[in-house]
Image (cartoon, rainbow, N blue to C red; front, side, top):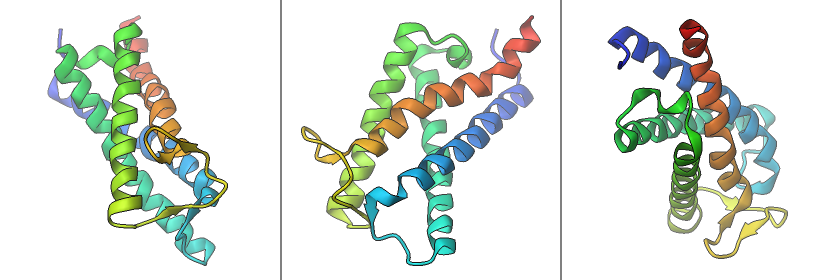
Length: 151
């Protein structure tokens, strides 16, 4: 059974809020590996906050792409191998497209020499790991409440 609209809105809100919070922590933690950060800590924090809001929308995009692929809104509750595989592939694609565009096309930011690189893609390892590691955790946390209600 598919969730009703209010339940779906709450699930989207939980996904977005968890995504923004966890991605903000990740963004702050990896800021040292980028060039082009503002000189003040306040401005750098604002830049990371803005990036985490965009990351939250990207994670929602991965969720809804999964809904389209699996034809189930609840695919994140028990994703199994297909769901995790989808999250990894989607995370790699999303992060690679964004990084390739931002670093090489519009030059919005760059990589410090400390950033480990993914040779086949020419992008940093940290942003790719971010979109591989965080969505499964975010989806787990966001779907926890609905699983508790099922018990």
